Length: 326
Image (cartoon, rainbow, N blue to C red; front, side):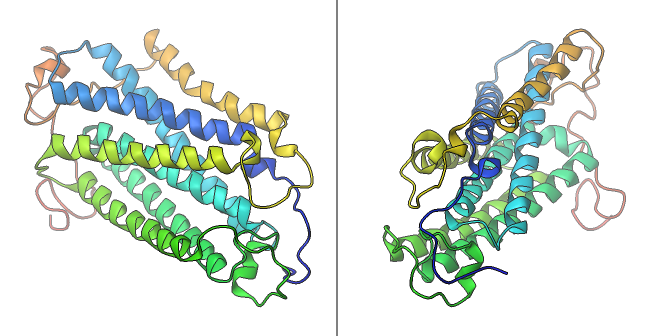
């Protein structure tokens, strides 16, 4: 049961949520995934011929980092919700920003790898499930943040669950513009829903019109969201010496413990798969070109051309031409 009276003067650090290794893991993964997504999208847009192996390696690496980002984003949000009776709004807000970062990175990867998902219904619906779970969790976080802002405890040391309860007025007064924070939070929640709808349509659309325009425009939007999230975290988190609104009782978020080193070390795992591909121990499907391009530019003369853009429907409903009807 959360205590919503006599706000403490400081809160303990939480390296599992806002530690320097955790934050760097999210940020570095985002940068790597966005750079690879941009290289693939703009390569297709320019219609440049490329060797088969480098494209396969980049796609494999992007797929691994994208999965890692969305899964860690869902995981850290689950941890935060499990601790709503003790976690402060400061740490809760950092988790929300990290969830927005993971959403943007996963959507950017989806723009670059959509053809790979179109030809495998299991991978496609797995991505659909992940972005739906991330949307639900992120929206729930947004609702909590909105309630905290409305009740003036968003910069306090009270637990986040006190946003739904009466407090005794001992909470620290918020430092930002309350009206701006309310409308900004609502806009982010609504924007997440819109992006989810567009991502769902893009993932399941049989006939994709304006494909390259959507790819480039979506990539620029997701990159902008990612940059905004990274800047916001850098300016706020105590791990980077940010200007956080509450006092922390210790400097644990700036210390390199085993957990922080492990978070950064996890970034090396996708490299193992790349080494195995280079040594021929793992076979990967070749990349698929845009339907408007010359398929031989990406697939090569020895690959099967006839069904390169085949949309594989799931076995329960839908077809190659309709989402719902067989």
